Structures are given as C-alpha cells and as structure tokens.
Image 1 (spheres, rainbow, N blue to C red):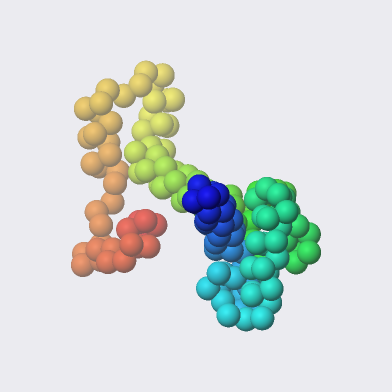
Image 2 (cartoon, rainbow, N blue to C red):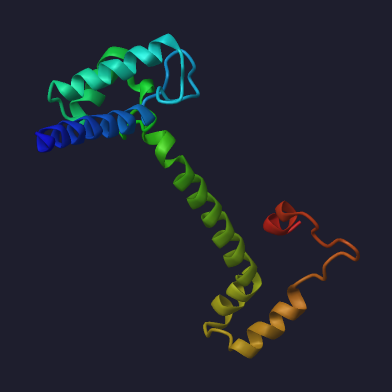
Length: 160
C-alpha cells in the first residue's frame, strides 16, 4: 500500500518538475518580461494549468512547446529557433567582430607596407634587405605631431 502511494507521489513530482521547467522557458503573453512560472497574470495561470494537463495526457516537452508556439506565436518562447528570419539576429555579432578584425588587420598591414619601398623594389628589380627597409621607413615615415597622442580607443584604432 505504501509503495503505491510512493509511486503516485513520484509521478506527481515528475509532472511538477517538467511543468516548472517548461514554464520557466515560456514568456507570459500579458507581462512580456516574466516567465509564466513567475507571473501571476490570469493567462499565466491558465498556461501553467494547460502545460500540466498536456504532461498528464502523455505529451512530450517538444510537443508542448510546439503547441504553445502554434497557439501564441514564436515570441512566447524565450529561446527562438534559428531559421532564415532570425539568422541576421544570431549572426550579427560574428559579422561585427569579423568587420572589426578585418579593419584592424588592414590598419596593421597598411602600417607595415610602405608604397615607396614597394616602388624601390620594382625599380631596382631586387628586393630591399631588411636593414634597407628599416632605413627607408625611418626616412619616409613622418614624425607624429607634437602633443597629439590618441587618447580614446577610437583614436588608437583609426590611428588619429
């Protein structure tokens, strides 16, 4: 008799744990900033009951998420799926980082490449030695303006 009660208690605990896990990942349609687990709005209470009913009827978590998404739209879930509509949102940090890295690499390459040295290499037909390159860079590189050290990160990045 006690094992039957323990089994029922475990079943209730599993349903409750699954319902709480799903509820934490579903946005309250009335509040918007809270999960339905944290919200006390009427719709949140109804959604929590719906989730528990769906779990008790034997539905998987994926099926429950799909039902909620179909009924309330994709914005009801906190973790949107990756598709062509959200690709720009998901990939924009990588694109910005790539552009910044490309700009940085271009600036570094531009600092190390001097057009005058490249012309001398072409005219002579023989590349300059590293010592000759260093001497030419010392001669051709203008001195920095007095008192103008880049103070901001943007100034250091752009070389101004």
